[in-house]
Amino acid sequence: MKVSRAITHILLIAVSLVFIFPFIWIVITSLRGRLEVLSEYSLIIRQFNWENYVSAWQATNFPRQFFNSFTVAVSVTLGQILTSALAGYALARMEFKGKKVIFMSVLATLIIPYHILIVPLFVMLSRFGWINTYRGMIIPMLANGFGIYLFRQFFKKVPVELEEAAAVDGASRWTTLWKVVFPQALPAAGTLFIFTFVAEWNDLFRWLIFTHSSDMRNVQLGLSVFQEQFATDYVRLMAAVVIITIPTFVLFLVGQKKLIQGISIGGIKG
Amino acid sequence: MRHKPLEPYLYLSPGLVCLIIFIVIPIIFLLLLSFFNWDMISGVYSFAGLKNYIEMLSDPVFFQAARNTAVYAAGVVPLSMAIGLIIAALVNEKIKIFSIYRSSVFIPVIVSLAASGVIWLWIYDYRSGILNHILAGAGISRINWLGSPDTALLSVIIVTLWQRIGYNMVIFFAGLQVIPRNLYEAAMIDGANGLKRFRYVTWPNLLPTTSFVLVINLIFAFRDFDQIYVMTRGGPMRATTTLVYHIYETAFSEFNIGMAAAATMVLFSIVMAATWFYLRFFGEKE
Picture 1 (cartoon, one colour):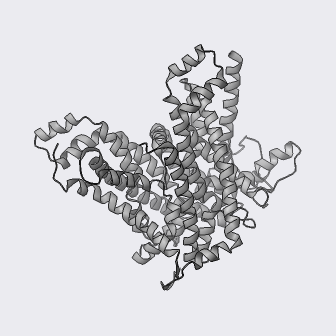
Picture 2 (picture 1 turned 60 degrees about the vertical axis):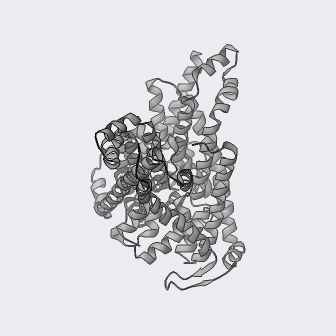
Picture 3 (picture 1 turned 90 degrees about the vertical axis):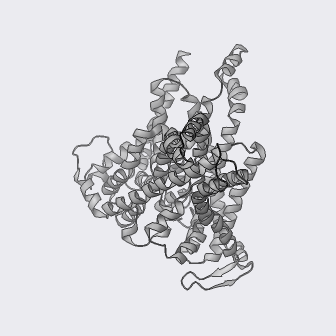
């Protein structure tokens, strides 16, 4: 028993190292000298070249790209929480014709990857004049079947008595939703926020196709263009990777549980 | 509690209208586009009948892309599921150190596929990459990982595995946690060893989770794009051109919207088939 236990630990340590090693390696690389990096394979950093980060930050228009990524990711995320809470509330707490069909259809949208919609969406957005605009990046993403499903599940668990008490006090449905029911489902909002923000922040595909000017790039497209221009400048490339991964890494540190909850509840993201 | 008859539809409308305009209508539009010639620049279009499909089926690139996608999915899906499940089973303990193992395996999931691609471009680098350096230490000659048509797709598969195993692990882990402990205790009393307990307790109870993981992994594998774009641009010699990459090139480099739509319909059918299979065997569970 003791031996098998030790083997399990050794195995898991080895596995963990395989997954973590690339992180250690990019951080080390990002701090090396530009020539040193081509022939130095030890894990020792002789000199910390922090200026690589400054140089990477300035080499491409990262401030603008951070702004674009943040603006779109936050707008999409907050928009999804709003539309999902409203629809989720109707599906959880109201009776109406077509409820089952609507709920099944919402679930069905979950399995459609965004990549399948890209060609017709491109033609549509071109017609709207939405290519290379913030509204083109935000509005099509404002609803998500996953969010609607998530809120419906959470709202169903909120005790009906809470709502009835509010109704006795003369509160309208609308007030009850936002003042009584929604606060009870804040964990759902948190899960959806982290889950959607990470997915939006990390997306390259949509930006590659729906934007074309350099000031409309997000951080991922910016990284890709940076890589095209400075293919072998690994020192600054790795610094850039570290910089653009910090926001999702921070979210991982503060919200690992919520992120994992989002994934295991059924996160198929676009 | 009572509500006005139209109230539910009012609450539903922002979300539903958005889903209809940006998911349902594009799917119908996609089907239409596949039967039309569509000039993106002038906006002129004409009915093409089956021309796009016929052209697609006589295009060797389409078949190579289909084959590459099949190889990619066959490499990524079973391996990322099996390894994810094994790790999930090993870390299924309530001791602190195990949560550190779990976090370590999970952490690549938060890195974008684009950044993963850039990281691995460096690791795979022919001259200075650490992978070839380690191989050299073991007496193996350098491998041109991403630069050779023989190894490029395999190299992309490895990157995806690194990024996706943690994703599958956390879903399997959640599934394992809800299997009642007493089932294992009963099996132990009956004298079942570890392997038998897995076969007769874990596996059947985990089946709904496994089938769910299978479907989302298939969908992921058929739509993966970012890491391929960053690392190989579908090359060398189209060795990593998958269906999605082929669609991207057809639509946005060759501006052949009709044929791109036809190829997307193929992808759409595959996703539908996978989902149908899932629902058929595992019912309409919520």
